[in-house]
Length: 398
Image 1 (cartoon, rainbow, N blue to C red):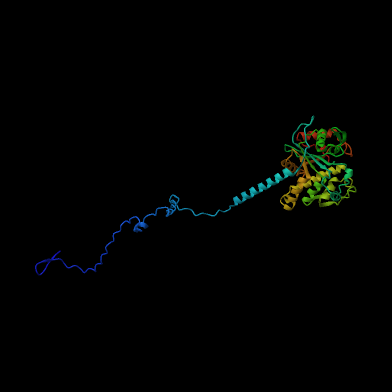
Image 2 (cartoon, rainbow, N blue to C red):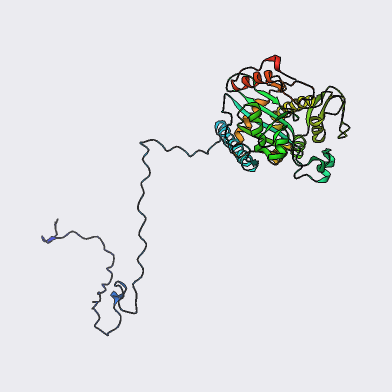
C-alpha cells in the first residue's frame, strides 16, 4: 500500500523501528585438510582408523520386546500362596506311614534267622486243605551267657546234651470259616524217626535238627507241613521282656523244685524269667498231669502273648514296639522258604486263642505218660485237619 504525499509522490508507509542488526559474521570456509597438514574439524565425526586406534565395542543389542501375556481381556489373577489342605496332609501322613511299614517289613524279612527245615522226600504227605505250621520251642542255649542261664533257670547245659524241643505244636489255618486249630504233640510221644527207629518225638530234633523233626511229624501225623517257626529259651524271654511282660491269671500257686520258679496265684504280669518257668513247669503240685498240664499252659500263654503283641497298646507304644522289633528277629528262626507275610498270617489267626476263636487240643493219648496216641481218635483228628472241618469235641483234650 502506498500513500500520497504533499508533493504528489507516492511513498511507502513508514516501517516500524527495527532493532539494530547484528553484525554479520562471515562463515569461515572449512577445507579438507591436506595430508600432513594437521587435524581436521571432521575428525570427531569420523571413526579413527589405523593400527593405533581400535574401533570401540558396539553397544549390546537391546533385549527383544516382550509383550505382556494375553488374558483375553481379563485381568491377571494375583499369585496365591500355596496352602496345605486337610486332604493333602492326610495323604502325606498316609504315604509316610506306608513307607514306615515297608521299612519295617524289609528289616524283618532280611534279619530273621533262616534254616533249611522243609524239604521234599520220597513218600512225603501231599498237601491238603488249609495251611500247617510246625511251631517248635527248643531248649537251645545258643547265644546265652552263664549269667543268662542262671537268671532264667534253664538248668545244666551239660545235662541237656544238645538242643531238644520242649514244645512241639501244629497250627492249622483253614481255607474256610472253620476255626483254626492249635495242636500240641507231647514231647515224650513214641513215634518212628526216619533212620533211627522208634523213639520219643523230641529226639528227632537233637538227632537231625529241624529237617528231621519236620519229616518225623509229617510221617506220624500224615499232615503236610508248609511252614516252620522255632524259638529258643533266651529269645522267648527277651520277647516277653521287650513288651514289658505278659498279663496272666494263674489259678494255683506254682512252685517248681526243679527250676526254683515260684509263681503265686492270681492275675499278674509275668516277666521273661517267670514266663519261661510257666511254660516249662511240669513237676509242681499245680501240674499233676505233668506234660499234659505243661502243653496246656503253653497254649494258654501263647494266646496271651500273641493277643498282647497284636494289641494297639503294644503296636502304638514306641517303648514296647521298638524293643520288640529289635528282639524278635534274633529270637525267631523260620524256614528258608517262609516270609514275613506268612508269619503275620499265623499271628492273625492265633490271636483268638484267649477268646475261644481257636480250637486248642493235645493229641489223644491212651495213658497219663502221654507216650502213646489213641489211634482211632488221632485218625479222626487228622482227617478233620486235612479236610478243614471242625474237630469233634469228643476228641478234644484240654
